[in-house]
Picture (cartoon, rainbow, N blue to C red):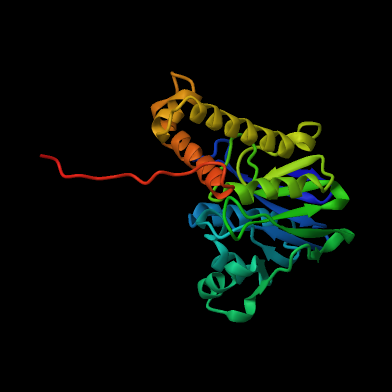
Amino acid sequence: MQITPHVYNMHIDDGATSHPGGSNNFFVGDPSEEMILIDTGDYEREWTRSILDYYDELGKPKITAIVITHGHGDHTGGLDRIQEVMQAPVRCHPKLVKHLQKLLDDEDAVVALKSRERIVTGGGVGLRALFTPGHEVDHVCYYLREDRVMFTGDTVLGASSTSVGDLAAYMKSLELLTKFKHDTICPAHGPVVPAPRGANLVRWQYEHRMGRERQVVAALEKGISEVSKITSDMYPKNLKKGLRPSAERNVNTHLRKLIKEESVEETPASFKLNN
């Protein structure tokens, strides 16, 4: 499916509950000239086959690069088979290079990106690599200035919030993305978000996280000190049981950020034997 003049989306309904709305792999450039592929999907043969079938539909253009958003298996799973077909260099965050070299058994096939590097392809367009740690330390978003598109990987999803490892780094990454003018969000999971909502989604995610942080602080001010009880104070009473672990992880992530900023002090737990 063509999204903008230089963006084509291979969408797959992977059925994952952690990111509703399916998953995406994007081809960027001009099918009659050269293109870039963003991510290579999960290990499932169906996923790999879907990417390669869509590549055939595009006319098998020369792929100037396969760029990776981060090292999770649902973004690099088909890399060995797809790279073998496309014979393109793989570009990724420097922290991911060695892992992908082992995956391909080829040191020369994987080249580290530089921060803000522009990767040029067909149609006179190029992707700007933006290092965006938070979801993972090796995460990279890609900006297509010509079509005002931001490829957000797992940093910003199309239909849900993402999981975050380092919230302080994540918030800085969201701030970075807002500095690049875009109308459309092309996430790794969930629907593509077009204008006008796409222009404001990153800022909305930032404000959403700040709102959650204010709720955590408010719970602490009430004297609530345990993660499970803070979660109960913040979230609706009818929160689905299956979402409870995710909510508690979210609270813990905010607490880690506040501890790092020295706004909150953690009191170590104590232990004793049961009589």
